[in-house]
Length: 340
Image 1 (tube, one colour):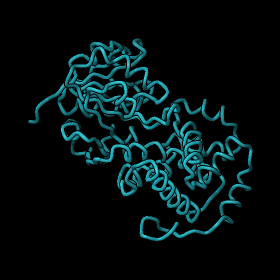
Image 2 (cartoon, rainbow, N blue to C red; image 1 turned 90 degrees about the horizontal axis):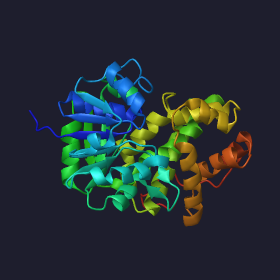
Image 3 (cartoon, rainbow, N blue to C red; image 1 turned 120 degrees about the horizontal axis):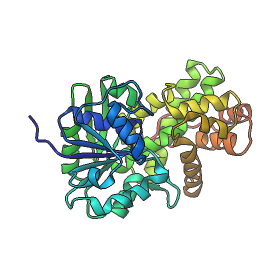
């Protein structure tokens, strides 16, 4: 029997709930914090997340609460599963309650606009005395709670964080791989949401398998190119947090970002599409930030530029597609000594 640790998961969305449920199922005293205390009480009594994962029973040992101090105080491992727009505010809220040795791990896949800041960088800024890490990968929460075999990645410079997350979450149906390239793993989780919108849009327009294969492959090339310029290891994108997450998110209507793209491809306006999803689709905001950063750095990202032109500049999908297909033809594989 492995040693137990007190675990806190901040954020009552689908993925936070799934991670908390794994931890509790593995016998660790686990708290799932929700901002809405009434919803937390309701979910605790019902033994399910009635808003985001209705119909899936949660482990008896999982305590769902709206009391932040009770959830965070004394926790040895804290997962922050908060949408990017609220991530910094919640991180500041927990600081007074964290134990001195607490490890803090982000599971959020987004970018803060000011300074192009990733979520683990917010943790570094706000909680400089705590070892931090990130968890990212091809992980639909609904399939996790259904006990479908799933792989994910924990990335950290701190070996203790990697070991603790692996020991806390590993099970017969959930496998945790390690990586030291925290920035690359986190960028993979953020960037793939952009391309999920593009693939959903293509599917709505009746794109065939050839088109989808080209989109996926060139998306991966863009992700690696951008990540390399940002200081990450492009080889990280050959793993679960890169190509794995990209394939999952770009080929399934369980992906919120894919559904956004599909509805846009059907001609619906952006605002009504985003409102209708009911959960945060990070890709729309990430697209704007990555386009701005790529222009600033001079990184060639034709798919990002094309999607931005369709959603925010009023260009037609047909016009952008024609431009992409007739653009300069470069070499296929980068990082092999060839010039892109």
